[in-house]
Each structure stands twice: as structure tokens, then as C-alpha cells.
Length: 608
Image 1 (cartoon, one colour):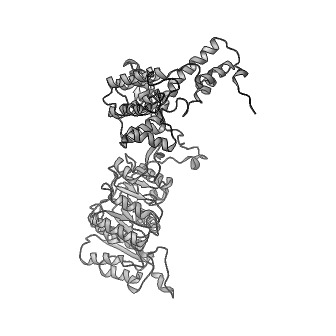
Image 2 (spheres, one colour; image 1 turned 90 degrees about the horizontal axis):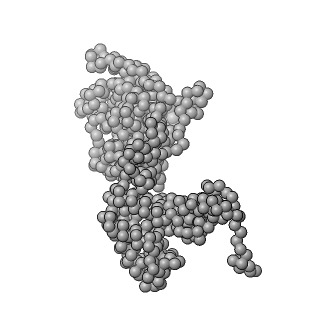
Image 3 (tube, one colour; image 1 turned 180 degrees about the vertical axis):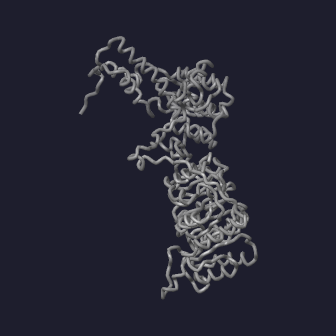
């Protein structure tokens, strides 16, 4: 267990299982405290990735979303608090996974009802590895003016009323999150406020105890007095009694154990929390209060007198010069959300689009951060622009030159292919340029020009799994899948596609590695032994060589390469290139003033 402060004004957390309201409350608290960076570094939503838009004061920010705990910890190594909003069914497993991460120091488990055997295992693991667990069944904790967990301290209005936007001198620990809010308010009325407040959680076996945190508070110089709110049930308070008797706590402790009314009931009564159930005289509120008083804590005669005891203890410390008066500060105004502020006219509206590739807000547009003037002045070509807008980085010149070659070689393939045919028919119907272009582009797919991504995907998978060409081709055959990138209607083994040869020549001359292309060539050698038309076509050449470009440039991770292939970047090259030719066919037909096309009936087989 930690022996001192566990939060600070730079503490950042990872939030498990996205919940918008508690995250927004954390960010609003950050803004209220004058934090420079948001306290939520990342969100973990199993099976999902991307960004979540939230407000940090008046500014809207995008917080990264990760699909796994491991990925989030790797991406945000300075985030050392794990806030777990998982259900009681999965809270233990996800919490243990977080505790195993070397970057995580504190885990807060919000769910109640976590199986006790799982909780005991978590506690043992945390203590063995010097980590802190808050909960289960906790609202979390707060360091005034610095950091808070989830819904701790409730609404912003309550936080301001309790002066939690700046640090005070009181360390507070309780089992109950709801009663914590009540005590924050009480303490703010009669003292200079909270320095740190913790709700350990109401389950039978909390991850950390009242005494764990009291001993921590005793080692924090800014904490001058300690307030403890316990409850009947369990024996957690007795560890605090022992610490007091042993003289391990040098600061004044004001304590109260709630549940004294339990004696009014003839039978045993459960009070809210799973742990709030007296199991005998020693676990009664009266016995605990007496033990705390005998050990030296300030214990009032009733809960109603609790506030007075806190006030008197604080005033003695002030009189003794132990506490320096705090200069009050005025917290900043937090903008109201749209649904709340629309009537008053003070609103903030969320954006509807996230863009990372271009920005037109400054004096000149930027592509991936590169100003338009630099693009022109440095002589960037279309390949360079594609590298910025598609890949968000400036690729080496041989890469951008390769992209340009692909565009030139794929711009058109005559008027007879399906895309060009559709565009010509549409143009002759008198339609506009966009309609003509779209009619041709819509034919692009697995049977026409859309095999580049599939070729790259299958070649990469086969190569990475060390399949021989024979194993690869035969496995595809068993699945009933034609090998993408292999086969041509016209070209043969003795009449190769000139475009393929040009691409291969360029790659062998300029690429640092052509391992995927060479693998594709080996596959072609095998398929040609089957049939003379099973040659490597332009789709296969571009697909395999683009893998070599991505892998050989050293500018992409394996995950990025997989994502590029999966999203459809490579087919994007064919679409971009072929759009040039389709536009040309549109202009050609309109320039020639060709009439409406009607297919000749002689070319149709009429049958029943």
C-alpha cells in the first residue's frame, strides 16, 4: 500500500467502459482547478477504437479510445490511475489485468457486488505489488484542486460549494460515497476544506482500509487533521484503533461510526452496503466508537455533534499556528452544455466531424500540417499530396514516384471495359460529368479493378505465414477462391502485361526490398504451370509492390500496414487513377456529340 500522496495535479487516468457523464465531470473539475492537461488520458472500450469527443472547459477535445487495457497502457505510459466502470461480472478480471500493468498504481472499482473471492485475490495481488485498490462499490476519491475519480463529489455546483477546487487541510476517508459528499460539505463549512478525500467502498472486503488511508494522510505534510466516517459491520475500524494505540498517527483524528440506531431493531438489519451489517457486539457502531475514543480519537456523542467536533479540532490547530489561513480563489466559470444553457443563450455545441488530414482555418490550407505554399515551393507532385492526405506523412520520393506510376498505368484501359462502357453510355444519354463518372466508378469491385486490396491481403497473409506458392494456391483452390492478382483475359505467359513489367523494373531499381513482389512472382510461376493465362496482372503487381513500399520504407508499423490494406487504400489508387480515364471518356463522347446509345439486338440472345 502507498505510504503518501497518490494523486497530484498532473495525475492522469485510463477510464474503462466509456461513460460520458463521469468523464465529463472529471474534465470539468480539471478546468475548475486550472489543470493544464485533462486528467483522462484515454478510454478503454473492449472491441472499439477511435476517439470520443468531450469538453475541456470551452475547448472540445478528442480522447483516444483503445480496445484493450494493454494497448491503452502502452499508448499512455504516464497514466497511472485505472478507473473501472465495468459491471460486477467483469470488474475483477479487468481490474486484475490493469494491476498487472507496470504503469498502473491505483485501481478504482466502481461496481458493487463483485464476488468476494475475486476481491480477496485482487487485494492480495495489489498488496504484494505495492498498489492501491479503491472499492469495490466505491465512488472513488478526490484531491482537492488536483484530481478526482468519476462522479466523486457529485455536481460542479456541489464541488464549488464544498471548495474542492482548491486544497484545504483535512484528510477524509469514509466507506460511503454518498456520505462523503455530505461530509465534504460539512468540512467546508467549519474548516478550510478537504485536501484529499477517499471512499473505500461499501463491500465486505474493501481493496484498501480506513487505516491504510489514515496512515497515508499522516505522512502528507499538507494534511493537518483527519476525519473518518465508518459504519457498523466488519472490523475495519479496529485496525485504525490499533494504529492510534501504537502511536503511528500523530495528527488529530475526528471519527464517527454510523449505525448506532441498529440497536433499536429487534433483529439484525442490513444498512445499504453489503458490509453494513453488524455481526456481533464488536461490530456494532457503539463498540467501535468507544474503541476509537479510548484510543485517542475525537469521537462525538452523536452524528449531529460530528460537525462541532470537526470545527473545534480545526480551531485548536489554527490557534496553535499549525494551519496557515488559505487565500480564497474564485474558480473559473464552466460553460453550460447545450441542453442546459439553450434557454439562457449560453451554449457550446459539439463538432460533428473529426479531421486529421487537412486544416483550412489559418492563412492558408495545410495538408497533414504542411502549408500549401510549401507544397508548391518545394515542387511536390501528386504522389506527395497523396502521401500527405492518405498516409498523413511525407513519404520518400521513390514511394511517391511509384504512386504516380500506378496512377498513370491505371488511368485507362480502353473503351470496352465495364467502367468505361458505363461512362460512355451515360455520357451519350446527356448526363452531367459527375453522373457519368459515378456510373463508371460504381462498376469497380472484385470483378473489375477492385482486386488490388485482396491481392495484397492474400499475398501478405501467405508470405507472413511462410506458405509455399503450392500451399497458398492449393489452399485457395480448396476454399473455392480465385487468387486475386493472378489471371488475365488477354495476356499470357509468353505475352506479359507491359504495365506489370514496368512496375517490377521500377521496384527492383528503387525499393530497398521486394520480398512480397518476389513471392507473387513465385506464385505466378506455379500458376503458369496450370494455365498459360494465369499471369500476374496489374492488380497483383500493385498489391504486392505496395506491401513492399509500406514495409520497406520503415515508416509504417505492422498494425498500420494491416489497417491500410483493410480500409481499402490500394483500391483507392485504382479508383483515383481510373477516374482520370472515365472523365476523359465523358469529354470524348460529348466532344463527338454522340447520340443516345442503344444496344444492337443482334448482340442479344433472346431465349425463353
